[in-house]
Structure formats: structure tokens, C-alpha cells
Image 1 (cartoon, helix red, strand yellow):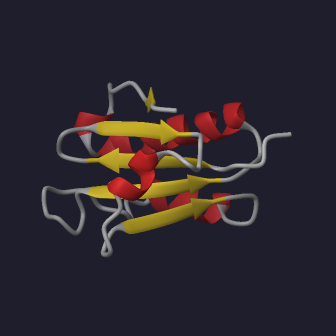
Image 2 (tube, helix red, strand yellow):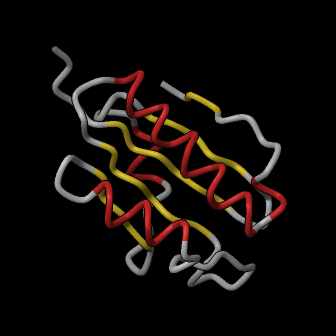
Amino acid sequence: MRQAMTHVYINYPNPKIRLHCQSTCGDIGKMRKSSQRHVRLDSSSISFELQRFRAKAYPFSADKTANDMWLEVDFGDLQFERAVVEHIRGLVGAHYSPFAAITIDQHC
């Protein structure tokens, strides 16, 4: 069974959703900012967090406080983690059209 979680970078208004499946990937630390939003999804938080995405509790805008986000998706199963991210893309895309048709990119 896989032990590492999937790290996901979401960027707006230049829409990008990029998966990082190796926790040692240098791009993970390189793109982190001190004021950046982080959301963790695991078996204890998935319901709550999906509801927040559905309710537009995480706004996206060109402002530096709302233009990107990191997700930490931890279920021990890459296929399921990717499906959760795809579902989140659909929820966010319903409110923010730039996300509606993008393809999720897997970096590592």
C-alpha cells in the first residue's frame, strides 16, 4: 500500500490543477507561500471539505490571497485521490468557469 499523500496545487486565474504524488518533489516546496491556503482531505475531513467546496467557501480570484491553494489528499490510494481531486475540479468549475474544462496535470 502507498504511504505518501498526494499534494495538489490549484492556480487561478491562469487555471491549473497539478498533482504531485511524490512528497520529495522539489516543486512542492518551491511553490508554497507563507500566506497560502492549505486544505487537507482524508477520511475524517472529506465530507466537510467537499461541502465547503460545493458552498463556494474557498473563493478564487486574481488577488494574491485567493489566487491559489494547496490540497493534501491522503487516502493511501492514488486512483481514489485523483478521483477526489477531479470531483473538486468539478465543484470549483461550477463557480469558476476557467476550471470547468481544464485537464488535471500529474507532475510526478
